[in-house]
Length: 265
Image 1 (cartoon, rainbow, N blue to C red):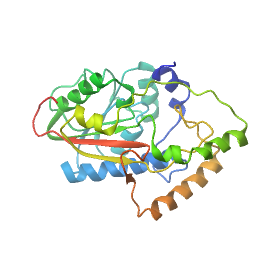
Image 2 (image 1 turned 120 degrees about the horizontal axis):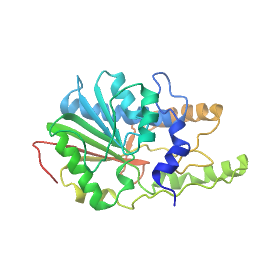
Image 3 (image 1 turned 30 degrees about the vertical axis):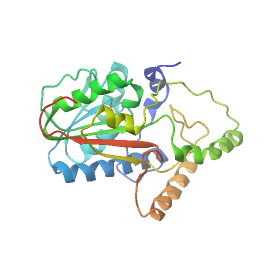
Image 4 (image 1 turned 90 degrees about the vertical axis):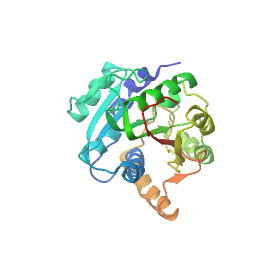
């Protein structure tokens, strides 16, 4: 089984999932919609001006790009030097830090917001609790954490999996996909780990379309991706504009909590 580090470095690091313009592929579209949800929640909870934000497990720093674009002070942490190097090349910033999510190299009560995207599912239950405790430690009283969790399976991907099977045949590619550890914890399990979670909802109610949809995800040709973006925009419009969904339905679910005082869960 390949490690997360090996799979990410092989191809995932070369993707740029952030754009200041219109999304041109399905992953850019998804990140934009995810950020809109983050922004909406943060604005209600703590306001949206001059925030100190930490992204844990930042990779290339895609979601941080959006915070930086909106004028916030953003710090990005990942465990691997090569990943941090790629992130620095993408963002040209010195706020990337190589460090451990289990032992964050920041002082107590320093950040307004802590976010992670696609991080917690790669850890066992005991370590998840430690990561969430560290997020709480570095948040100021009144601060907010948002953890975007990608489960091992989801209803929407299973429902439309036949499309990807057809694409494999049409593209004639039988790519061997990397096996990366993903826990099998349910949304209820995360709620048990952190009773202080205030909001839990599903996100990304669309299938990921590719002849190789598993991590590391393979984008389709540009013309195909642009067509998908147009279809997905219409899809969301017909859903009433909602990017949220049932916690078991979408590609991910969001854990959101607020720190009233410095404490551990």
